[in-house]
Image (cartoon, rainbow, N blue to C red; front, side, top):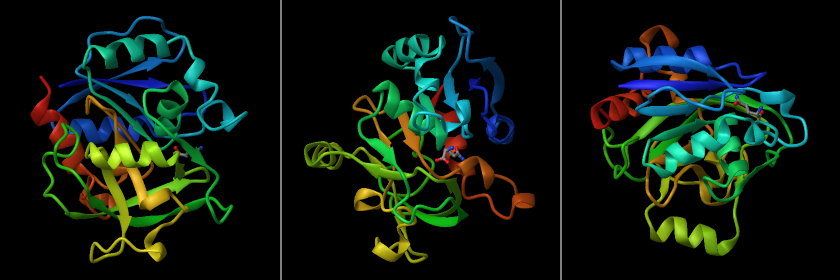
Length: 228
Ligand SMILES: NC(=O)CC[C@H](N)C(=O)O
């Protein structure tokens, strides 16, 4: 499985995600945002960070990069696209995923571990997990408050496109377990075709015992198992 990791000015998790992909048995190559063509890729990753210093809105300028039309074209051709944190923000700004990431409800940058419940295993990103499995994964963001209109939220649920929800250590979906005010504790969503995933937490940062845990590795294993 060969992943292409797109790097923008201010991206900071590209090496973390590349290392996670390698740990899961894949390969990763970096591509700078001003390329208009991409090499062959079984997976495209938009990593976390602070692209363009978060100016205008997080992800807004990155979504207008030269590389993005090709990312959109590949997504349309069925190539899996994974957006983590800043990458999720970029995906909503491109329109590949619905809704928006607003300022955290508490108006503070949050950097800590949270628990996530796997809400669907029906995707190439989550199939290696068990339905309802509780994961411990870090978050590090100030604009992670997922918002969409009521029709969009209803559609995401009807179509089984909520991938992860913030939960407590026992898997209960509670207001106290919601770090940022996201509607219905939504932490990650899929597109209609289920080949684009955006999520705010950072699974790449818990993929090695030296990082304190490996709960994030299943996402990268899922991809390595399901794509070429
Ligand atoms: N770690 C990240 O990708 C952070 C994304 C964005 N800069 C925010 O703070 O919300």
